[in-house]
Image (cartoon, rainbow, N blue to C red; front, side, top):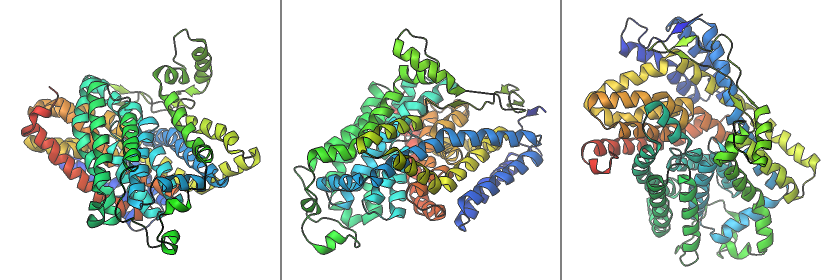
Length: 561
């Protein structure tokens, strides 16, 4: 049942083959736009993808089916596991009434809605992206904003757009590290190059998300705070990525940005506080909200934030190289504690071969492609978040009965979103294993001298389909590298452009939409969130395309040689 990938299955014609390969993506967008339930839309798309793989790409039917199971398993663990645990942790604070204190503590810093999204949707979310990645940043940040009284659609959309400032470095630099292997470009060079492109976007995002929410005029009223937030983040992101590496880039940039803005707000306040029309407190009194909310002691505030402080500590511990190695059962050192963790990690780390699929697909060069159900349950950030939830049980003083009830309630509320993610990742895997994604990529690679402009679009496509910057980099990194060499473009710039495009495309991916709607209680409203985010992702993508093109042809002094 061997299958050799054929990237031009229709008469050797790349253009027609690419049009056919695009059908699953087009179908998904159309049915979502017509408000079909996301889980039904993703299941329909999966079926169509399997049919195209079997009929057009001549793939033996059992191969795309088994590829779909591989994708579905990856969708469940780690992606769905991270989302479930993230929302569960948030729900624990709501169940115990602690979120009211969290809300009060944020309002005590500022009751201006514009400044709140800089603190939560931009800085705090970027920290979670750097520490945990996957769906955690959007899930937790959007849920917090909804708890603060933001419209769920606005909260989901703004958090997705804000996430564009951090995804390229992802969870502890994983997207950058992953792309180094297939391309042979040193991690340091890729980190430095991405760190010379992404900060321009990071500088734009704080301004952009405030404009989305309040309009240009209201945005200009807090331009000093936006500059403090954006410049501190972008500058730190650039310095760390170029001088240290990708692992701590987002974490340090977020911490510096958050601290800088909080300190700045101690000495500066906007002349007019921006409220939503529905804010009851704003309607009831002209007094600043934080004066009414100052009744909580420092101890109460720390206690309320304790679950999220614990979350941050746990994901940072999980991300430490030695700990991460032990959690996967691969530790070879002499530390006794890590050896004990390694034994447990090995038990929970399995990678059985995918039946019929493993090594039965040959790539364009005739090399067999391994296919396993790689599950490192203990090492996934979702498990770190679960540990934080267990510790939070004691910190919050909730009974095991209520703790478990909250978990099952969270699972019940998220079940359709989790099912959607499993189906979506499944069809992404089928598109990849059949060669459809490479067909589309090869068409974009035909743009010649204009390729620097289109390079981020290729990454955008990968990020949209896979829902992962890391996966998109692995998928298209080598293609970007080879195409750049063939047209005389700097390969480090091309591969970095892929990461930037994937960063932007990921936020519009079906997985991200499902995460955002699930976390904000809008299951079934994926089309509304997609419409909210689509335009903004295209604008940022165009900005990135122009920036990469200028770096390739005009601003070459910025390119890592």
